Image (cartoon, rainbow, N blue to C red; front, side, top):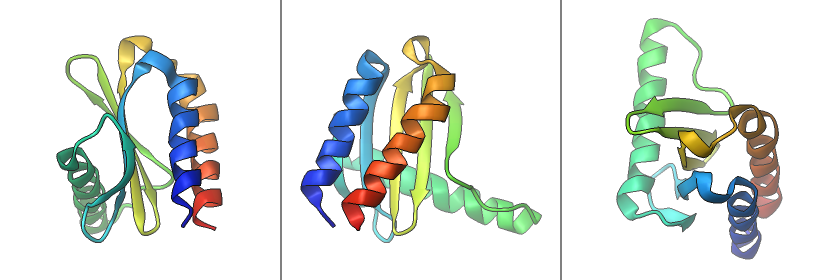
Amino acid sequence: MNIAKLNKAIEVLKNNLGDSLLCTAIALEADGQSIAGFNANPKFAALIVKIIKVTNDAVKISGLPEIGKYATFDLQDDRILVVLPLGEYIWGILLDSTKTQMGLLLNMEIPLAIEAFAEAIS
């Protein structure tokens, strides 16, 4: 893994999302430890890992497929949480929904982030 490239991917996300990005973290799925981030704390990193695990466990029990490329959660207080399961890693992004253009986020920013992440771990 190239940490410099990972940090660059986060910088690109920060620049592209601007003021809508409140915090972001990339964590190890195994233990919830953050390996890169912006404005996030260890609890946020652990939370995004737990969200993926609990959600995937719940959908398995119900016979539904697991989370695909990402999951979005519309939270109270004008917040959106996007969680991207990336193999051994989980990337969480917390946004201000009043400043976020969802079409751009889902169709441009998330695919670019996934691409930058893939390059950083190759």
